[in-house]
Image 1 (cartoon, rainbow over the protein chains, first blue to last red):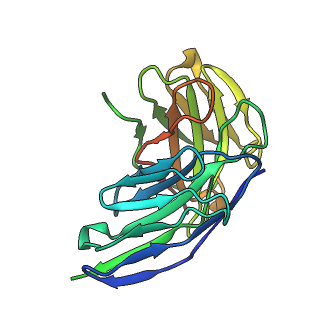
Image 2 (cartoon, chains in turn orange, yellow):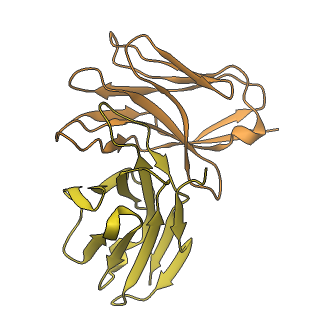
Length: 115
Length: 115
């Protein structure tokens, strides 16, 4: 099945710093790619997604571009805020069994933003 | 539109006891997934329902875990008897049934602690 490798943290930044969280994948074909976020005390939320090569997903100032040449989907934000402190997960469909679009996840990257 | 809900939010039980987790998907979502995150590790797929049928249960760790989705609405995940290694956060997700990969929407999770 498909797999994903995500930069492990923790990552600690100061407010307004630039953020990059690396994510690379191995996949058959060109599946959709996702970033999920888990804020403290909350469940998983979809942050953004891209459904085909060269697509850029964006939300809340975060961006990620689906790059098939480098099989990457890095998450970026130009200026982080304290409220962005959370755990970020890169994910894609497993693709190993027809009809079941179960997701495979990276290990998660914990981001802490200090004022 | 109400999101995915899970009950309870936390459960603390002793080894050997039984626990039942419940998930209510978004109304109209035929796909329902269960995932688990053991402390510090990846979020791992457990099983997938399409309506009331088990589409894929390849991620279920052993026969102490039993999932049901009677009537194709809410789902329950029973662990009997619970072991220490079952501790973790159990997430439920739902999505529309259709071609291609549709976005999975996650619930807040149930944190299970087995003592």
